[in-house]
Image: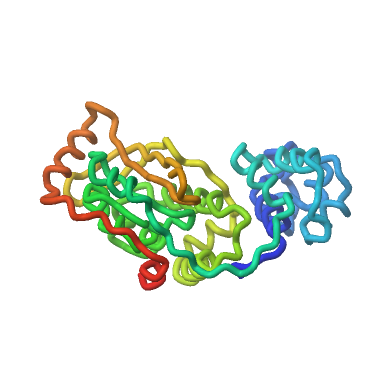
Length: 288
């Protein structure tokens, strides 16, 4: 189910199942009926009672102290990004009325910037819906256009998948970044629609989503196999757009003087003309 009122418990359970006993100094011999650590083992290593930990997983106690959360993060071997996510799950969230899909409008200055920036660039929202893209971004991938979603492209489009030699790593990073971007805001209709669609259509997405990984991947080189210019290694950066909550400017750039930089220059020359940048409305995205 996409909707889950016990986000903290679900996260603790998923991460517990991924920790091998020998990695935390426990014997791994004998028959274990559960994947990863047992609840009582997590409690013992964190210095809390087994009953209290059980209440956390079951959602009967949703206000653990910072000390308890940090201890659990240590036992579950969470990195900084995953620890921050754990802390956010335990922070009481204000109640909101059910929201209607809002119209996403890319600032005019940003759309103008896309035309002149000279490298592949596009604007996405927190659900990885592409809101605007320049011609170089569309030349890099036909799926980088207004109204498309990067998750559905990578998981469901065979041509897009073929562009990623390290597809398993690319999808793991993508889903981890998506979970970090969404955080605890899981009641949005767009989130429910997107996760439901991907869960039904992609076993790989279901597997990754169940892991509850949280990742920060900006600045990490991305390897792509482009059908026109061949192997590329590009850096990807995401920059927050002032005055447009939740929107990010995403740019791809190659190391200066590298073969990838030469290939990107060739790709730019093959782009016949820079088409006008368009922006997507909620209705465009829903129809995509």
